Image (cartoon, rainbow, N blue to C red; front, side):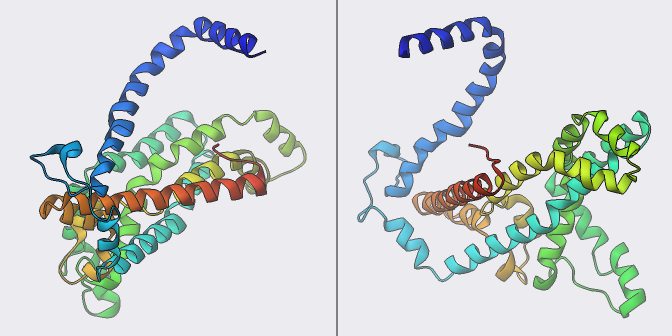
Length: 307
């Protein structure tokens, strides 16, 4: 039985060899940039010294030395809470927007108009975070465009970019603007794959556009939405350091210091490589556990999962 199955897979691979060749560059990239760097995780269990290399460096005593050192610091709780809160708020406000945008875009009549709107919407995704934060600093300055409008209502400017109370709002709003169009692509593709027969049948039953969105479009793209939500939850502890680091100021670090910025400062600026790797490893491990839990919950409740 095993030999028959093995021969079956062999014939299938020979028949589809062109597809495997096309997949090869992506597989090589994955091995080099995703799997090979895992070798560096050994640093988190060692007292790493650059002159000795990873294998030559002595093991930490005890082996969990750098992990316990992180949790014993006064900043550990703060950076974990900041990371989780910022990530959850980003998911709550940023995740539904691309879905709504894709549903609305799908209602635009005319292929040229739809492509124009889509191109304009995902263009900000390719703008550098440095440029985005620079624009925010200009338009949100005390004498900038945004504060000019705010002063008309409250009579004074707000310190939007340096105040701790506005940091998360500014991050989420800029993130929505930057990623909305690009994140909607997968939902637009899912909507494109819906058979017109469903809509034709709904129209024959007298359904309005809103009813067709509610009872045809959303249920049929729900598997895609659930899979994207699982992946988003699996990255709940991962917030990119670039924009957060650029938005940091001395007056907002109590809410803006997250795990990725802390790892950057400790690892690269202070050269504490073992300690920083241990913090990053803890971050990745929590993400993996959350991903597995979210996947199992959706698998049991909706029979949809990524594995």
